[in-house]
Length: 294
Image 1 (cartoon, rainbow, N blue to C red):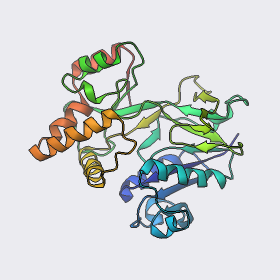
Image 2 (image 1 turned 180 degrees about the vertical axis):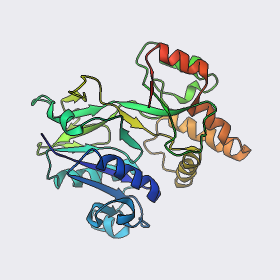
Image 3 (image 1 turned 180 degrees about the horizontal axis):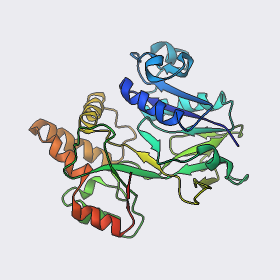
């Protein structure tokens, strides 16, 4: 069975790093590395990591790497390249701190079932959401997961399901719908990117992640909102940083709506509209096969 390592870049509280580490430790990787995107990193032991595997990306780190890129996506590419160049396992799984494999999936078995000619594996994304009336402040408290919508008239679909908020969605999700990936060790001329790896401008030949025990898709559950307070803190940080270099049009719309709601003290209502599904929304998404229980 192949072994694998996990890498992420994060600027997050210790409790979120620990939740990430606990989740992936249960998947039995050979190594978990977190590159902390700032100076004030928590104690590695506090988040369940060996000190060498919580890498502080502060001034000293970037001074030896040609300076700190302004865009977070560019910083991610630098650290993913470093993780890949020092990879000692068969695969490198590249994810974010708020993304976890859904269910009791054996990641090594998923990777072992990939055809030899495939150089990468895509784990498709789900987005964690709440039921209306749930406690939206409970971190990782979402009990539902919505799938991306790949049918026709995607914009109209979003307007129908999320009245007045459809402009914030892409293919039925607020965040990305491209998934994340694992890449084989030792491939020549590879650039490890956020959602996929490339050779030049061409994505590597990738398989869709499947659980060989069930034949079903191995999903990546994205906690785009870990909880109301964490979501508020994330947007406050983004607004303060002004880092929108690679933020898509829909994300910019979300940010503008958040700023307006924050100023009016209505961000909790905005959060509920975006992440808490009413019974009729649940019914439609289930009928279309676009909603799972977590």
